[in-house]
Image (cartoon, rainbow, N blue to C red; front, side, top):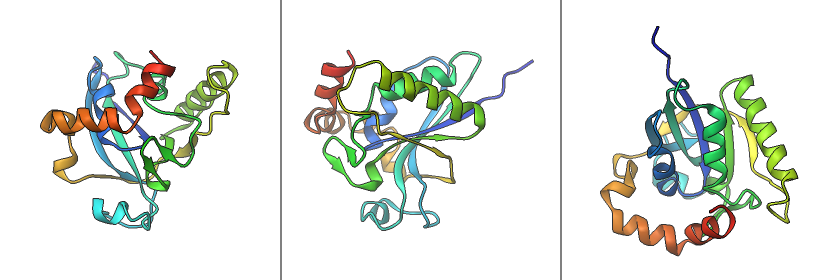
Length: 175
């Protein structure tokens, strides 16, 4: 009997930096950069970056739960973000870059909430974990030039990943 793939949606700042960490794991079928949570249908990057659409840059991950669990994906997610910063991530500021775990069902919600609780209690961070956990809304794929950016524009991606402060934060707090 074939396993049905499932979806997970995470926002953690610039979506360019959120693709590679998931893309490299067995069980991940695809990772799509896009926008979710706003009030504009089929938004463009130019619209979203104004902060006026209500959308957040996010990634939609299609995965095989028989190989990789949702809990594993949440664990990977935490390690790509600063979960104590509600107002953006690293160099990217504002609502369109806020950290969010978007759940698609009650099981995902419970897993995300439990994981957040455990992270808060771990003492890893002095400040509280403020990443929100919200019901998933329509996910709109971003323009093609944003897809797999780390592959298409590796030097730009690497420079941005370092220069934004993300790489240093991850190394200091997660590695």
